Structures are given as C-alpha cells and as structure tokens.
Image (cartoon, rainbow, N blue to C red; front, side, top):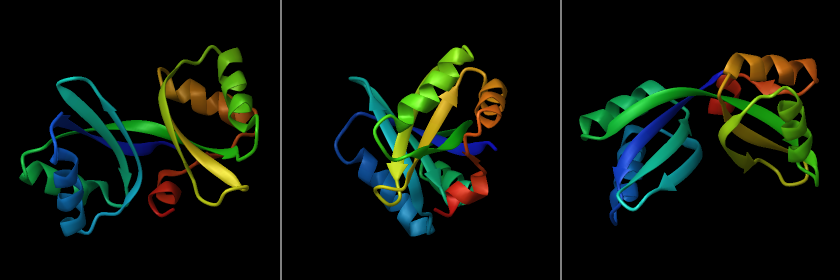
Length: 143
C-alpha cells in the first residue's frame, strides 16, 4: 500500500526543471504526479513516475541527486468536504501529515491525494479501518 516517490534536489535556477523533464522524456519515463517546493537556493521536485528504476538511473547518470521515499496514495471523493473527511480521520488518530499533493483523473469522480506521514503504518491502518481506499503503488504508476 506504499507508493515509491523519487525526490530530485535542484538548484533554483532557470532551466533546471526542464533538464529533469528532458532526461525523463528521453528515458521514456512518464510522470504520473509531481510536487515542487523551493527555497531561495534550491528546490525539491517530488515525482511519482511509471518506472522508478529507469528514472533514477537516467537522472543520476546526468548528475542529479535523487532520493526515494514512501508515500501513500488515497482515493478521495472529488466534492466539497472530501479532503476534510480524510484529514479529520487522520487528526482523530493523531497522525501528522508532513506534506501532500493531489491530482484529479476526471473531475467529479475521485481525486488521488499523495500523503507523506510521520507514521506511515499507523496512517494506512487508520485509513483502512475507516473504509478509505488506499491505492497500491502499481495502480498509481499506471494511472
């Protein structure tokens, strides 16, 4: 129920993000979801891709610093209050959300939220106990 996410550390300068997407495109890697956070000096690009091993190898070959971490993909009702329902369940379980990002496949159906938790096992358990759909990595990589 964990999804592997890769993180790329980027200097905060023009064209650096384009370099990442060029490398991934040439390697035949498809980006499924992404989040970019920055400071004045550097950025962290978090990606879910369809082939983690190929992406990491291609990026490292081009000199990028690449890390990996586990996140959780949760299906959320795409309607007002859908995200709040999930966050209330997590809050009542005293589970901290470190960060999150989302993508919508088809508006009006379900969105997918990618969560990074301080305690990933407790979060998955709590979500499943409350009948929240947690997606397998193989499902997310092919969305």
